[in-house]
Length: 119
Image (cartoon, rainbow, N blue to C red; front, side, top):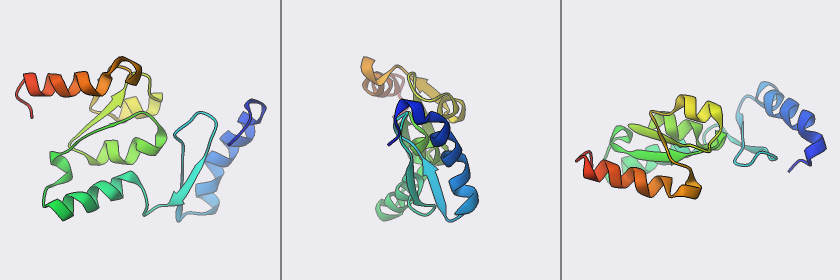
């Protein structure tokens, strides 16, 4: 957790941690934190394990995310959806953009998929 006046330090650490510790990934779910995990512990790996357990492919999944900690799963799923209020690089990596989570974006997106016969 970083205070507002520590943003430069946060940005520097966010960029350099993976360089110095290649087996770790630095992500974030909030604008003022850093989450450090094993490269093998991301949401994408969790999706792959879940899919294997229930005998489906990640390409058959729809996922939603808004922060850098969602980037891997957004890229892994068949349909990766970023929230309108999400981080710009997450939106750029997504297949689609849903309305903000403050505006029921996930529910509205799922309703649209059902209405159009996509799920």
